[in-house]
Length: 150
Image (cartoon, rainbow, N blue to C red):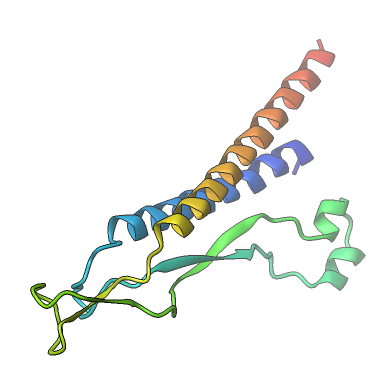
């Protein structure tokens, strides 16, 4: 695979992964005051866990076979490994008039901190934009290479 197209493919995996990360963050923000879920209890913050994509070939096999440095170093991109619930403590607030208050008058609110979610959203957005720049740069390089052949 051409290195230009490899760069595009790797960035495309990042775009997909970061888009899902932004969706999860949006869901956290939307549910920041949800005190009741189908599973019972308050909503729990979710996080995305990324993992490097692998092709199932060992490092030794990659080094023995013909290929580029990208092949030897197994540059395949990123994928979402899983979405996990945060184990941070929930927020307990005294509100005896709330329909979800316990016998002592406390309501359990989600462990979602809007400031943290906004910082995570900005980081995901920046990573997304950076990978768009990589794709645009690779496209420009491919077009320049085609102009050389004219």
